[in-house]
Image (cartoon, rainbow, N blue to C red):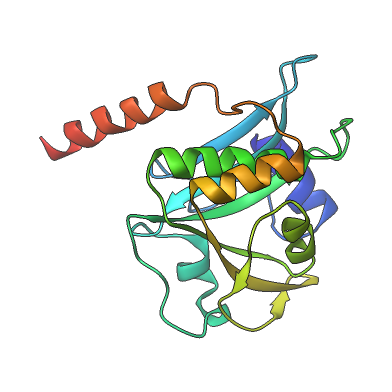
Length: 196
């Protein structure tokens, strides 16, 4: 996953420094608070797509590093997560609906944990793509520059209706996050351990 991020966000887009020796990309938000959704290519068992999710009561990229993209105060809510490092491997043959698949997986997770919203800082061009796949990006600020492109902060709705719409428009016919229940149970166990 971190190698995919290096190839996309360092080599292809030039957004980040990355580690040229290990060819991995990490930042200060890759902590125990981060949740990663990854798609595994069944042909080689390599990561072919991924995104990082962070609950907005924790430090997160938009609020802590790109606050100037927001008109109002950053959202801090247990029912809102940030999505960042959203990427698909450009060197692999991806399905035409790979963006829709990633969004559907995010929404599956969000509905399961009773989330209300996602937020993100994204390339301005993602808006039309997400609308095409049935999501509803709503701007939280004005367009600004990140590295070499125009970006904007968005908030997105999370509920079953939106998930159903994204699945329909993306032609996703079954659940994508296969270990969701086990994963959330482990999260709850770890939360109890920290509280003890």
